[in-house]
Image 1 (cartoon, rainbow, N blue to C red):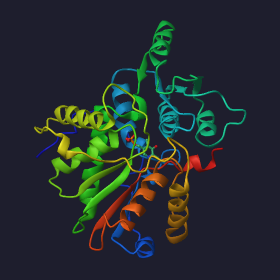
Image 2: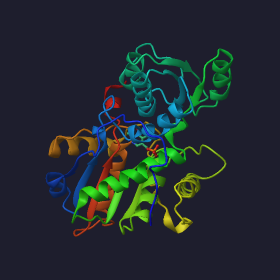
Image 3: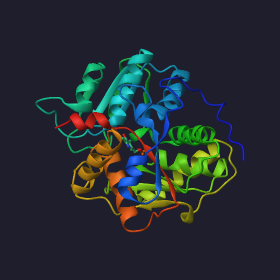
Length: 323
Ligand SMILES: *Cc1c(COP(=O)(O)O)cnc(C)c1O
């Protein structure tokens, strides 16, 4: 099946392809399948992460529409907001971030970086998922600006297409390698939807296994339904004649712990063992939890010897330096 991504405006923000590496010492320590890693923590924009891929398409669209200001939303330690702030700076656009919660006394981690990139920060209190964006949009319009709204986590059809393209990048990098599973942290759904699309478009057989990170529902639909809907809308946009059904989505919800951003023993162990066997840093919110899930899936026999598992490192390491 052919997906035409050339038709979309895209701006270069990172360094691609990101490295694909084997993790022999981690594989040995766990004693199960061979584990590989796609290093999207090395996308090169402002300490990296998966949002760089999405922003290449989203900000490409913003430029096409003549925008001069970007608005997006997230948590105080949002990796998405940090990368958006850096991308806007690089493109000479203003960046407005609507962050949940209250301003902390000391900015740390991603928030410190948001400030260094010169973004305008609006504290939204309990409105943690961008509820105040419309009002800000109207205010900027009234000041003669031409704002562009980047959705929460960069997860709309364009953001998802960026990850379908990432699947192609992986495919071209693999040569004779093939994987039984691709495992990653799934939170706003764009990565998940895009990898589903890529699997379909390039005829792969691996399982696309999202580890759910945030147990709060954000809309009317359950999270798996949202991912499914996004995958279908992105397929339509890319001219891919395929309808995904409920049977196509794999979302593992066993590792939600005490909620979003609360580090527990699962994350702590995954971060320590990955660091001490491979010299690779994971983050406390997303990749630490997803890798902890992978460890558990090996120990419970869900992943077995003979499997070839790709862990997609989606970034987030600046949060290691957050309070
Ligand atoms: C945003 C993010 C994710 C989740 O990706 P989605 O496309 O939002 O599901 C995973 N890991 C890190 C580090 C992130 O910043």
